[in-house]
Amino acid sequence: MPQTQTPTRAGFGLQILTSVVEGISAFFFQLIPISAIVLYAGHDNIDILIPLVFASTLAAIAGMTGRYASADVNVAITIARMLAGQINFVLGWVNIAFVLLFQFLAVALVRMFIPGAAAVFYGMNRLVMPDHPYAAVAVEFLGTLFLILMALVVGQHKLPNPIGPIVAGFTLFVTLLFTSPITSGGLNPGRSLACNLIAWDFTNVGYFLLPQLVASFVAFALYRVLHYEAILYTAGQQQKC
Image 1 (spheres, helix red, strand yellow):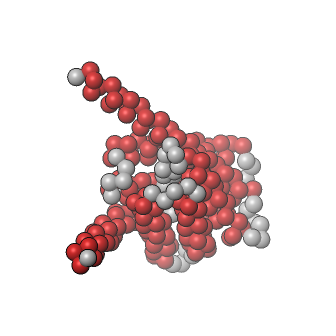
Image 2 (spheres, helix red, strand yellow):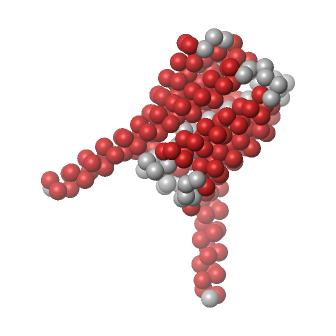
Image 3 (cartoon, helix red, strand yellow):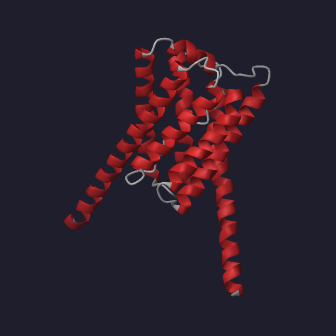
């Protein structure tokens, strides 16, 4: 019995350390782009600048922490990866707890130390197309779905550094380019809640959080179907040989 307890404790400690790394990654992924949004609000090229900041920050974080963690700074992606079996279920929920904690800490610092943060995010938190709320729901759902599917593929094939981080960053950049003009590009339950907290306005929270979380389960279902079909196709090709 003593021989089996030591690896278990060591493994648990490693899992906690991994979750802390994920939390710190989420802290900087929240702090840097949100600070840029506040500081460059009203800039002529804001629609390109902000997606670029988000994408480069994600790529840098994934590149630096990929050896120790999976840079799961998006709760919706973490849920889908848990369902797909790419992340241990218990570890996944621990990761989510640390990610949300550090993200909200970053939000609090931005609100405290950067003037005008609340006003900027009050504007971001409003639907860009208030007359078409269902369009916002569709955009958030499809954008989050695309991000999750790409993350599942990258996680399945374990793309090496720096290919994996570059793919992740480029995927986020392209998705934000299309979604930002309509919903400010939430695509992340933690980021959406951050906007709500900074602005202290929860009017449109359902247009963001609900489609993002639903996208997690739909992405998992699609991934399982596509992955299963790929396995059947490979098996069929091997039988022909």
